[in-house]
Amino acid sequence: MNVAVAKTGGGRAVSDLFASAEGRLSASPDVIAARREAFESYERLGLPHRRIEEWKYTDLRALVGEVLPLAAAPDAAALKRASDAVKAHAIEGARKLVLVDGVFAAELSDVKALASEVSLMTLREALQKDPGVLKTVSTDAVIALNAALATDGVVLSIADGAQLSAPVQVVHVATAASVSVFTRSQVKVGKGARATIIESFVAAGAKTYQVNDAVIIAVGDDADVAHIRLMDDAPDAVNITSQFVTVGANTKLNFFNMTSGAAVSRLQGFITLAGEGSELSINGVNLLQKTEHGDTTLVVDHAVPNCVSREIFRAVIDDRAHSVFQGRIIVRPDAQKTDGKMMTRALLLSDEAEADNKPELEIFADDVSCGHGATAGALDDTLLFYLKARGLPEKQAQALLIQAFVGEAIEQIADDGLREHVIGMAERWLERRS
Image (tube, rainbow, N blue to C red; front, side, top):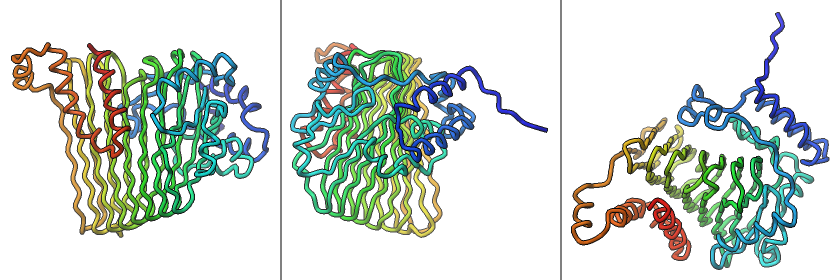
């Protein structure tokens, strides 16, 4: 008996999208072959749905439905809108690398200022040398689709012992409506290097767009790296970001994420502690309102002994919004003396708000210290009454309590300027809520 796979209308649309985009993605036969292989993997899987355990709470078939057409290369008007958006969201003192509708914009980036400290290529340039840049070990459908359709990205290499004098800010700007954007970036941090990498996702008048981003990070031994991700996409956008991080020995990695936009968002991170004596700190805040859906899914793999990981996650959920946290700590059989802790807390500001917290431990070693916790609740009525009794309006009193709630995660940002910038983003979200 012959078995044929019947494609849905959405499947046909994505097939047409790949066929129409194939010509502008790359002319190299090896790259085209890699893209086709990735797309065939996606076609077999389709958009993730609730029957897949990792996507149980974020059913993209129901929430998104279809993949929109690929965004065109930005024109002069789009670059002008992007320039204004970059100025509004730029981190003071940071050196910017700007991607507009998935295409690297050298004219908006601080390429010359970075040249003396960082080796920089675009994804297009990197693919000419090594088509393997598109390969991933994951079987996830959205990651396969990213490999098939990634338009551009930045490839950074920080030399051994380098001490970056300023943070590097990668700004993703969306200027077009009803399109999809696929980007893929790589960051390699050398032995003993020190760096701060910031990623910002912003809109410049765009609506109902979709972002599929992938980031591959390799951190060498004895390094000290801070990675800050700030997602403030349009209220009706979709943002799916996948991160793959490998950490060397005796290294400190501090990762922070804030989600305060997009109708549907998911950050999925896969972090492997591959060298002994390393310390990993992961902190995150979801600020959600209306019908927004924000998903943070993290897998921390302790592959070697004597490593420490800490995860602190906070979610503030208003109206009918939905926050998801899935955190898994894996301790391999040889990873003795592992110290891993994870804590997630959700603050529900309305009766219709929803939080799903799913912390997990998979421990295959016997000399470890691991733990997790999850809570969900409303604002403390006693504290709220105390503040109102001293003359504060209810919204302002709520704002103070919310700031204190998310503060534990935000305070983990070591850089004072960055921390103040993130606090400012949280305050603006609270003002919009008011």
